[in-house]
Image (cartoon, rainbow, N blue to C red; front, side):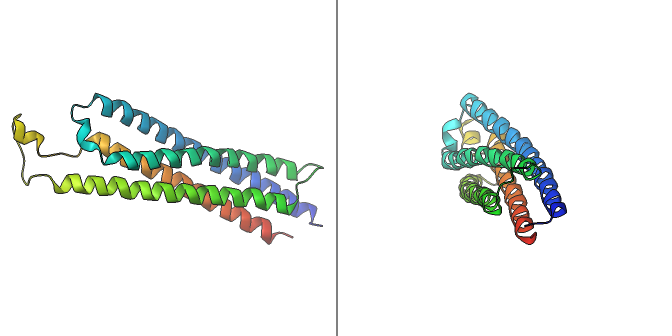
Length: 187
């Protein structure tokens, strides 16, 4: 049986780290949703949206990583509830606690994989687009100005949204691993 003081410390640690993880991932998730919505609306309004076809797979993987982030947010909320339950009379076992934290680790690892592959897709598409640019500055509104393929701010926003979801999963992974280590260190 674990010492009551250790259980209180673990309970406090789970609640605090769960809340910190939850709110950091929530803020980053709101940024991701805002950027993806802005990118979707802006690209449909852009005149030459068909030339950025290479961004589609990267944005799809970013959206999939965002869905994993939503599940990770739910896991963060469950960690807070678990921390509260540890301080009550009906305590979850160490096995239940570690299963919840391990599930969070797996979800964040999957989110990191999808967002990393999406990042590679976005960066590759932008590299190809940048390599097609003519050297120098193209001045004028003729056909040659459209052949320059400049990288637009909407395309950079897609990379930003991917970076935000990648960072959110990294934060979740770090917090989950720290809490898992803390659970096994006690007792």
